[in-house]
Image 1 (cartoon, one colour):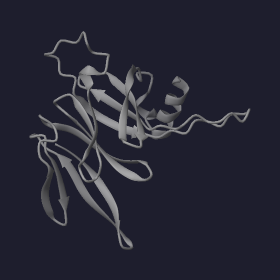
Image 2 (cartoon, helix red, strand yellow):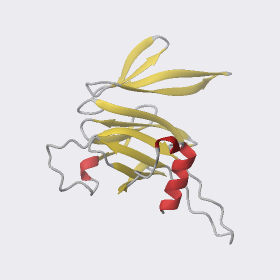
Image 3 (tube, rainbow, N blue to C red):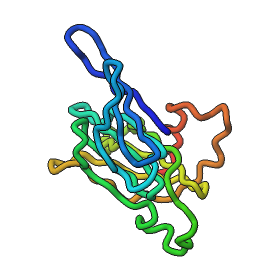
Image 4 (cartoon, rainbow, N blue to C red):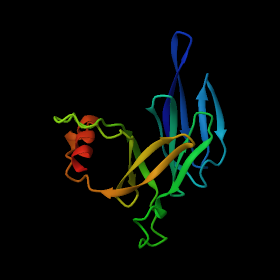
Length: 181
C-alpha cells in the first residue's frame, strides 16, 4: 500500500532497504531480496502512508499513518516512541464518527528561522509534520526530541490553499511555515 526507503551505511557503501505498510496494518521490510514482516499489526487497519526521516541527526525515525486514524512514530528497531489519534487532538470533536479522518499523506520538514538583525537568539528549531487527512484538512504538528523519546505537540489546522501547484517545493513550504508564525 505504501513504501519508503531506509538508507544506511554498510562499510564504505550506502545500502537501501524498502520499508512498507500493508492492508493488514503490518510493517514489512524488503532487504537482500527477501520480504520480512518486522511489526505485525502496527496499526489496527491498513497503513496509508509511511515516512522515514532523519530530522534528528542522532537517529532515524519512521512515521506511519493508518486507516485506524492513528499516527505513530517508531525507531528503526520498530519500538513505538509516540502515537496519537487524529480524531482526539482537539479539532474534530464535532465530526461524526462515521466520517473517517485517517491521514492520507504526511511529510516532515525541518526549517531554520531567518537570521535576525538585532542578534536575538534564534528560536529552537523543531521539525514540523504536515498531515493531509481524508476529509481534506491539513494538520501541522511539531515533533520534539526529548530525553525519554519523541512527543507530538498538538498541531493546529492550517490553510495551505494559497499554495499553487508549482509552488510546492520544500524551501517554499518552509518559508510559508515561518511566515505564518
